[in-house]
Length: 282
Length: 73
Image 1: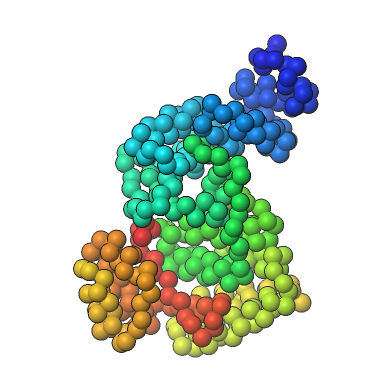
Image 2: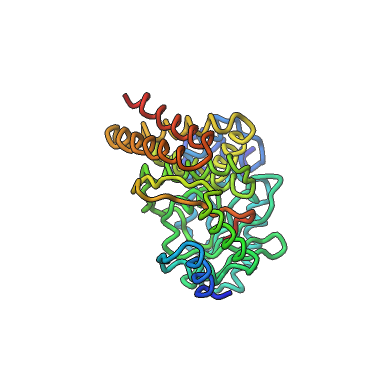
């Protein structure tokens, strides 16, 4: 028995298979990985477009297939409450609250042209972003699973990722590992992974994919994995000549630093990473 | 401490240096404990206890990462 109304109208937009999957989703039946992927690729976009055309609905949901049951409704309730104190402002709720059983805070992002400090109030983390942050890689990733009071469907990515940015992020992550800096490692690794993925494959990972990837890297041979990510990103994402040139210069600089500073182990790891880039690029 | 006071203390450690515009904003939003932590870090950089990385853009520049145990700076 179908719980979907006006099946005739639906058939004009969706195929029989797509209607079956929507039905499955609405009745809280679990989708297989293939079905989830198909839903995300072929159905979600149509649903978002229909939602956006419905003028009386001023709230938007993206990546619903990744959300846990009831979290979308809870997020909407929070969004409406936050709106009362932030009238006429663009607000988005994203992050692990929507898709993970265990989460630290509920991340609430408010677009504000005024400089405001972030704050946490009873597990609600208020993050204030400037309007230009909307077109960043970070925001595009965040907006792939979210509930908002503005349409994030038409966001454009204005940020470009350079080889220098990738190398700087790699340097920061390796410093975190060398200094056993647990306060920073996750966020630095997240930045590194999201930028590498975009630079090498033009893919913007959603926050759940990012979280899973980072957690996986951290429980395995982390430094070896991130070195492979660096090598692959530089090789696949940038011009070979540019990469050979920058890697040779980095090796020379680190060879100078290894004499001047007493941290041979840390610097040797960086030298080896860039040597691997040169080997693969040759 | 105000940004100007911190700048003077940093200059006393490193000598004459220039600060970019963002510096004041960051310092004025920092708690005093963190400001003191920053000054200790500057001293450690000067004493070569903290190891830098070369900038991938300009290899004559070195980058020192300030990473205290909280990441809400």
